[in-house]
Length: 291
Image (cartoon, rainbow, N blue to C red; front, side, top):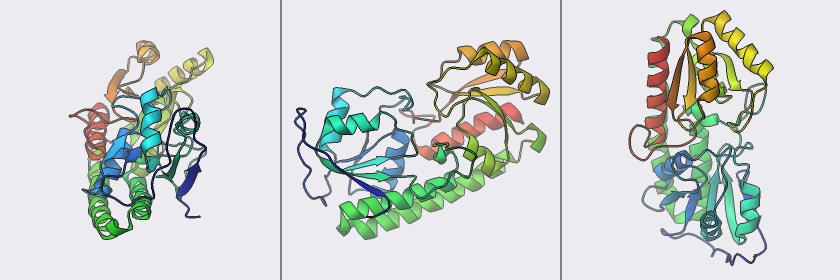
């Protein structure tokens, strides 16, 4: 079995899902679990497919509750592209309810966390997205063999952009003295970013890879002590995060709260309309807060 495919051969349910036809046409439905994955996949698909996002703009996959419309989308899809690594926790039940047959391509297949625990936020290092691109290219080629040359050309061009993004981020981060490259975040999402660009993660408000978690009073007190001892100047949050706890910590430590990063979802237009735009915006916010 190809390493990136899990064939979801599910029984039809009362939802009325129908088996997808054997694919290979320009209008075959291709679905990605999130907006940022849809953007990455669209760069590879080019004009042969429109890649839709299952989750809407602004949705947090960690706490997402799927809708009847989502069941229909999945039932109609011939290819579903997911991040994997435990990121889309809602997906198993959704697939069961959708019925039908589809190929499920795991964008992060073959990537090792290289960290002490399994952080699913691989995309915060653009070099990991290069692996996403290759996995997505293979999945699209399997779905539409006639598009193989176009998918490869599109993927190669996008990889050039990702390498340029990586170099740009490194250049921006170099404006921050090494001793000030300190990250305090809402939840544990920045492991790959920190490892790639030389940041130290001081701590997080939620000691979890999910934003759908709750800290203990002891954890909060420990983070306050860490911030004070390291002189970390800011706490970084996704725009969809509840800032209440971070603001409590900020009141205790006199640090700034940067509450408008985009880590889990793109935006409808600026500032994070594409994955590359999202990364550039986030890096600019981080650099401005720390340099």
